[in-house]
Image 1 (cartoon, rainbow, N blue to C red):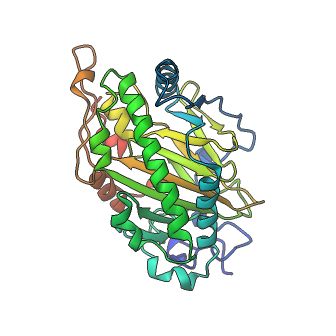
Image 2: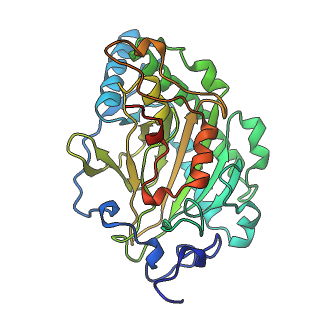
Length: 352
């Protein structure tokens, strides 16, 4: 299989170590020690929020607003149950994703691309074969909102991929808009502050597969990062996510709760709130026992719509701490920078 010190250029899309089931982790997949997963990581004590009554019970909604506000302020992360998406829909999306990744590379070849600006693409690391450090995953990314504009570009194999994934993305877009409404209401901006912008905005689905890794203590599925979105909603079939606890700067493993969805506060909401709410820094670990599937929906403003701090969030005691930016600005940054070396788009937005 070659020497263990092979460089990133030895692993183009379709011929990566994870796709070829290597029995070792090549040097270019070994992340710096400070990034590596700690097998003894404690479980994160993240809020679990019951959304039952969020839309039709004013008393429950008031409680949910406070719970989500506290989660956004203290963690930038929470999990939700009774979210309104059926288990059948969740299972269908995971099944469709797993079916796609089981296809031979020849069936996925037409979607292979390392161009981060492509609306539908199959890839592996962040910038395949280019970045100094590669990551142990394969993925399918596709735009999803509005569904009618994009579904025709999605894979048509497996035969039910569009149907099952389409059902999920419509439901999770609706859920994300409702949760963002709760968040903006908690900031005193009103429930509909971002509604029209999200209706006209981006929904990028990152459908991820993290294959079994022979030496999971050396590699990662994704490096530490925050999401450039308003909100990211994650569906998964097994644990693997770790979040950085801002209180003691330690990594904590997110527990798996059947039927729950994970919700990450994204960079755009931190900017909107002028730092009152924090986007969560997280990473993805891998394991040697089982392949993990996750489906992350990144919900953001339109491609060229700039997010800046709400004027209601800026005053003499809270001067504006962020530069405005758009999703295209983010894509342009990751096209040119190696995220595995710690380069972070969000850090370029911070004024203070």
